[in-house]
Length: 236
Image (cartoon, rainbow, N blue to C red; front, top):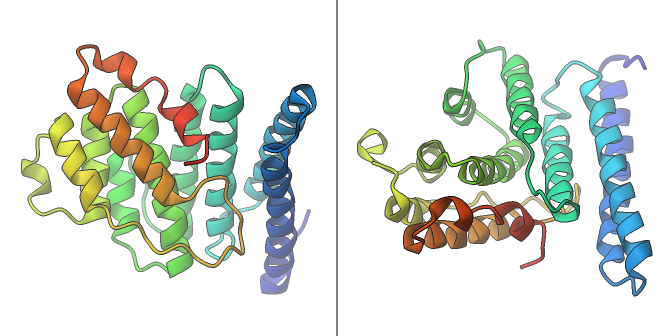
């Protein structure tokens, strides 16, 4: 598929946004479906449709105009998977997030880096409100992925960036620190629902707080965060 200038990008964004919204409305409608087998089928189809949509978007070079949509579709896809799968998050989800961040860096014309270094550069850039909102959503998901993978320090560093917490390098990012960092995160205002999402950023923040609280009080920390993905996938 070839895109001819800004008009082509605008058309693609409109089509892809409509496609995302149809999928998310189908997902939302499935929640009240009385037939459990049909509900499962519809939700699995939503996951497949989001994967296909993301592949179409990422089949084109990254562009600032479509990146908020791309990041939101990825966000929706991972959360939907965490809801329909007993295993929750997959290792490939972290890879997909990193790949998406690399595409953001490419669109910003900046050099590549790794791990939280990507977030440092991206969040320091001059971004639109729409892009900031999409990044905050994805950052919350990134923190959930890291907590589920036993990486609370990485999650703490990202939360410090999101909350603009002073003395970030002095913070130990233990479980009690995580609670403070999550509280300090002032979630970017959600844009009017032009691009629909499975869950709000505020809900993800609440799930992260509950997971950090469990982590703080658990004698078996690894087991207390295993359900982060499934918690995010359910309505608050």
